Length: 204
Image (tube, rainbow, N blue to C red):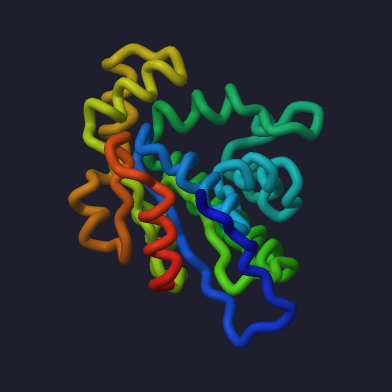
């Protein structure tokens, strides 16, 4: 039985910022929960994106300028409208992302200011796709074989196999991410994740 104490400090010389990512169905959320159980804070970029799109006034103005007044209804993000617009226009999707990602990063920087841990983690599905991995002190990639990922997402989201494969095809392949990451955790339900995470934490 392991016993873990949170790694919190009143003062420290340097807070390390660690990016953590993985393709759909890789199980990166489970790894992040383990990190939190071990006493380290995790910032969830995808959740933050939904929040800043409703609360960041600068971003809201930029999205309205790009997409029109229909981007918001009753001062709330009009998700169906935006999804329809970017689905049929890949260039527009890139432009929306170019506005959202800086706002999420601003939110992350503000979040970091109130953390008291020597290590903080940022979970993002598109860490390598957006190039934001370059802003972290280290990155962790969570991987699993393709069939495992497909089955997980089909079960979790109730999607067809073809729908899951389409989502996977929209993300960077793991072999490309492996060349860029500093650490890899294989979440294949065969290896114990906690010892793997403890090993990485000791190196960080």
